[in-house]
Structure formats: C-alpha cells, structure tokens
Length: 153
Image 1: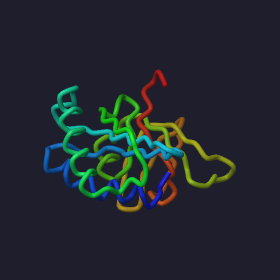
Image 2 (image 1 turned 45 degrees about the horizontal axis):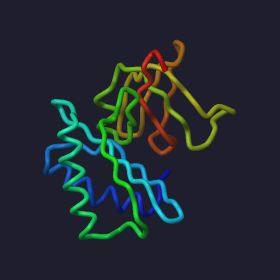
Image 3 (image 1 turned 45 degrees about the vertical axis):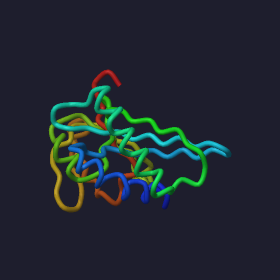
Image 4 (image 1 turned 135 degrees about the vertical axis):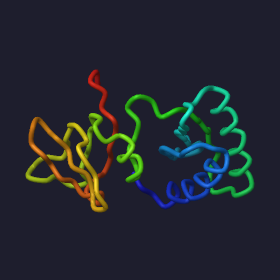
C-alpha cells in the first residue's frame, strides 16, 4: 500500500542503502496504536547475509533517529527479499524477464485482478506476461503488487 509516510521512508532510506552498496527492494510500514513495524528488504549482487542486515539496521536506525519521520515507537526489521521477492520498479522487472511472476492489478480487468505467468518482456509503459500461452500486456500504472512466483508457491 502506498502511503505518504511509506514514500517518505523510501525517499530517506534508498539513497543511504545505495551508498552502502545495497538495493532497496521493498519497504513495508505497518502502523499500530502505540508501536509500528518497519520492514526493509535489501539485496545486492553478492547476496545478503545476517551481517548485511545488521549493518543496514544500524545505519538506517541512525538515519531515522536524526530525521524522526515515524510518529510512534517502531520496530525495524531488515531482511533479504526472499524467493518471492517484490517487483516494485521497472529495473526489478527487467532483471527477472523470463521468470514466473504473480501480478495483482489495482483494479480488475474483465473481472480478473490476478495474473500468474512468465514475464516475457517489458517496455517504458509496462510488462507482457505469458499466461497459459496467451500474452497479456499490463501497464505499470495498473500494477498494484507484483512478486516473483516460484513454482512451489
């Protein structure tokens, strides 16, 4: 879900992660009455281990202590994106052309909201999926959420 605070947190953390050599794959912010949860998913070419997560957690905590964008107490979690990683930006889609993905549309199209298939191509406007042998074009503006979809999922 896109919220102004989530977008602010992305804008704050993404440059720092880039300087540290990591990619911000996704950021989840779940507010609570007295305590919120902030999850950051990171990646890099060499992969992500526990030491990477600890390093990023320290650096992001220091940044958020200075900027103070979260109005309540919060718990910060940092992890790798996992096998069903979120695809959030065109560069994410480009990296995984040929892979199986699951796309949820913001609004249903012809009564259908979810598509799972092979990511066949992308262009400036969106992506093309091969869904059971039929090509389906989806604009980036239509995508509510997209993830890799391993065969076991």
